[in-house]
Amino acid sequence: MHPDRTSSTRFPVPVDAALRAAGWQPGRWDIKQAEIWADTLRDHASPAGHRHAVFPAAIEAWAEFGGLHLAPTGPGRQVAPARLHLDPLHGLHMARTLGDLGRALDADVCPLGTETDNGSLLAIDSAGRAYALDHTGDWYLGQDIDQALAALVSGIEPVRLTAG
Image 1: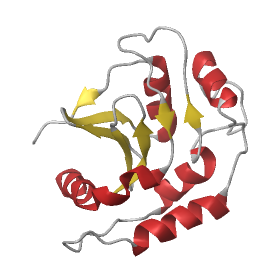
Image 2: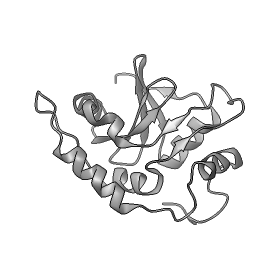
Image 3: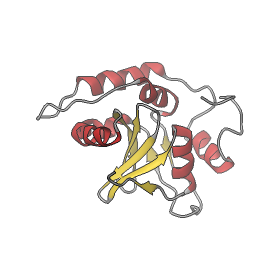
Image 4: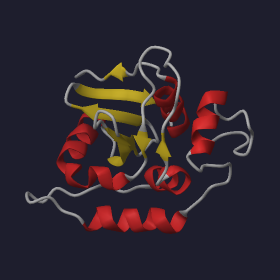
């Protein structure tokens, strides 16, 4: 947890600005929408029977950031800043892929949203760590949603996950 969830220093200035431009503010908490997403994901099964894991870290991330469209401007530090849509239903049909990643990480994994420019699926695990999955591989974004958003919006290159 963060020492002061309402502090204006929670995020770097450009990240805070992108979040606020998208409609976020300290204390934002839409638990009703988060529960709707949780129910939708829990109720979905792939044709082969794969199901989504839903857990508190995901619900908390959706309650605070769900529904936001982030469109950061300016150059990124190492890569272009990511345009994001934080809606877990972007991963509705990815239960098997997320389940496979979860087995590799020894943690449940649930969708967070998508990078709208490249289609990378954003995901969170039961410990709150964040990831991006795309056609080139699986990427570690940070130990929590704050670190992941800061990395994505700031254009910090993610770390590629490797087997073992």
